[in-house]
Image (cartoon, rainbow, N blue to C red; front, side):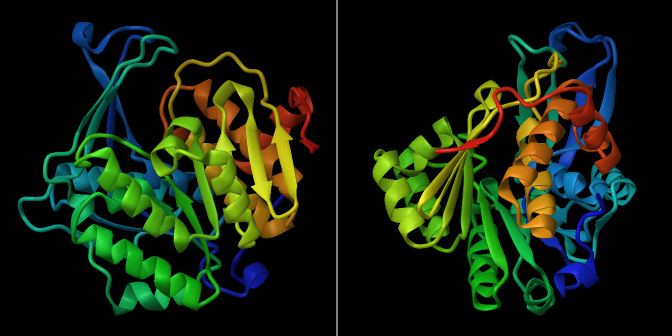
Length: 328
């Protein structure tokens, strides 16, 4: 299936993604620990970069809104974005002291340690401007990752972008993407998350992330869906639950042998947005998103292994989602 293009959606962009993109380093030995590594392979990582790459590999017209450092690491990310068909029209260059994020991630499914360096992170330096506002007005979807809300100027810029999207009928997807580093405390995080959730049409996260958003998840779901909004609660190996006004979709997974535990959520969201925008069919979109997640956890890397539509179809022909999706 070819995903939506400018002509399908009536806009230039199928999606714009806000947040971090950086360099990931993986020990060359699969199953090995970082402390024992004799060498590393590299890929682009970061939640927003991965989600944008997932959309780009799925054939979507997608752009990334962020800031990168003017150095070799920033150049690496720019090059990988180009390789995954992600437009760079709205990527800014951070001030001289800002640095693009770096992560060291082990390629093992259990006891997998991921160390992330975000000292004065470049992506938290991006600023809302007229070019970004115009782009959002010409996009079908805006995907916001929670780490973009950590500090200024990124926090105010992100909230302004969400307000612009709502004003221009651009659907806002909030990926909670909770990372405890750099957040001052849980109370402050909850306040900002709830402010952002008010501006979102769809909120996505796992159980732990939703626990940061609210202590009363059941009541929150009722109130949120009563506003004609949607919640996507990811459950990893247990599948996902999608809550919408008056109905609830439970989904399973494609049971592959996982090589690592990370990257699946980004593949899932990118393909969920791409497929739903094109088909307007939640069951079909979730199936494609779940297949994409399965393909990514079974391989080394993140952005570079985001699947194409052909790869997703091939997996779906080889195996069945277990358990199958059902409305409850």
